[in-house]
Amino acid sequence: MKHSLVENVSIFLLKKGYTVKTLTRTCFDIVARQGEQILLIKILEDSNSLMAKYADEMSKLAGYMSASPLIIAEKAGNMLADNVVYTRFGFCTLNLNTFQNCIENKFPFIKRTNAGLIASLVGSRLKEKRESQGYSLSGLSKKIGVSSRMITKYENEGSEITISKAMKIYDIFGSSVFEKINVLSFNEHSADSYKSDFSKKYSELGFKASDIASAPFDIIAKKQGEIILTEVGDNPSPQMQSLSKLIEAESLVIFKKKKPKDFPAIKKEEFMGFDKSGELIKFLKEHH
Image 1: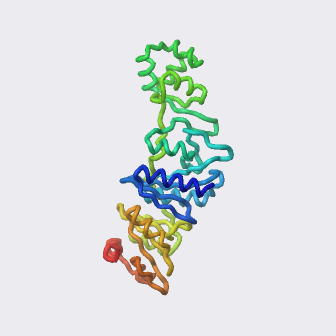
Image 2: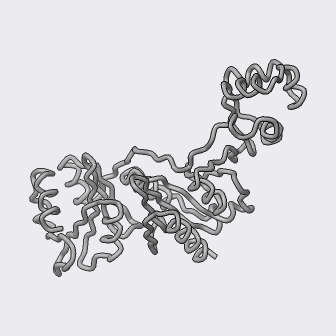
Image 3: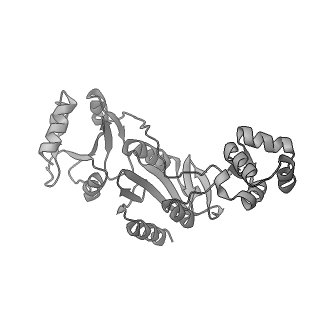
């Protein structure tokens, strides 16, 4: 089930002009890029099965990569409805149909919260539409089943409203009076957590850095737009190199005994010997 969903998402994105990389045994399943837009996608049969530690790492990586983190699933306990945005650990969670619509710039306006399905009105647009279509406050209030005062409140403040009211308003004015949920927006914030000697060293060199357990690399570091993916050990993952190319990052292997062939690689002592971030970046670009 999950495998076919990964395949369907990948094929759809390729057809839409994205460069796509699928990964295995990581906290995300697909990285896709088109121009400056990077999507970090976790595919699940049931989004409730996502573990907090994977969500935390995916959130960190999205911050470093300026990527949009998304969960595409079939259900969250129950089947996910079309054109509804759910959330899991703060990530937008949607089914394949909704995701495809979003890529085609048809964003949903209904989201699932603890209070049920709701939509957010854009007050100024509601007022504009009401007036342009010749509805009085009382005329519209009767159609929707709320007071005239409530319509005035909607128009002045915008409001989150229940799905039943939203559908009545939608039938009259269409989707333009609702706040669209842009699931492809991203969070620039990149949290750092220095645990290993290597991430601490990156911090000393002025990088933001985090140790990552469930990715094809062990550390991600960023400084002024330069991203470095670092793997520690003698058998670097081939996934790291293709991933670093896709997100336009540098890659580095810190090896113990056996120097790998196709990567910029150094021993721990050499890495710890860098005094300035510029020296490290220069080394990586020369050995790229």
